[in-house]
Image (cartoon, rainbow, N blue to C red; front, side, top):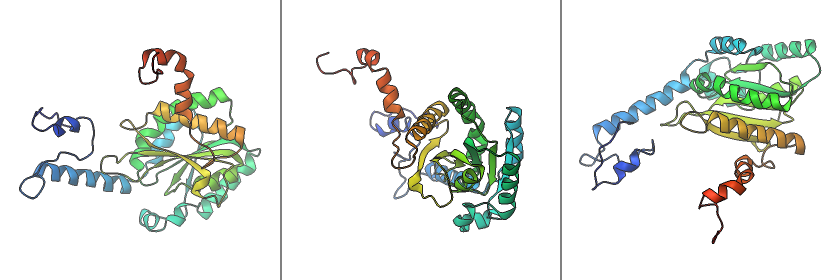
Length: 274
């Protein structure tokens, strides 16, 4: 965002420094200024491009391999992007060829795993390209500390959230998490979403999933997203459930953990008269 001159007669200009929201755009006659209109058109074009950007799975697969990850490349039942956008139901299930490929893998690697990580392009391959590797780097540290067994990372073309349920069920995974490009907004074409499910299986509704959204540099940090996801996974294993009955209290617990020391230095937390 360009630096705006301070105008004591227009305090909205100071607020524009703090948010990408379209506030204090000004006006020219009965319309908005040309610059604001051009900025809007540019943001709209970025959002449209993000939706149609091809999934560069080959490059991502190579980068994951360099970090020591085995990968499986699968495809949803949506054969192309136009079909994917018009038929959400096809993006929620594997193609026949991919289902068979996954069955063949399971036949050679029986036994099940604790966790399967799925990466799908969703509605913004740009988000997946930018944020998958740095987020996984933070998540790996926490998975290793828990000692969970992990399946190969599953890359899915033209995939939607629910496809992780079928993948998790076929792999016999206790938990599944899908990293997926969220629907672009006019200020966030690269927002990554995380959807976590305990005991994944075909037919589950969104009520059985926990969502962590807006993972990106301008949104929720990789470290905080990984921390929140680890909390959900640990609690899910303890309580054997996920979704609406599993509340994300990770941030509250983190705050309370340091309450004894923080309250001395933070007037917002200290009780009256302390």
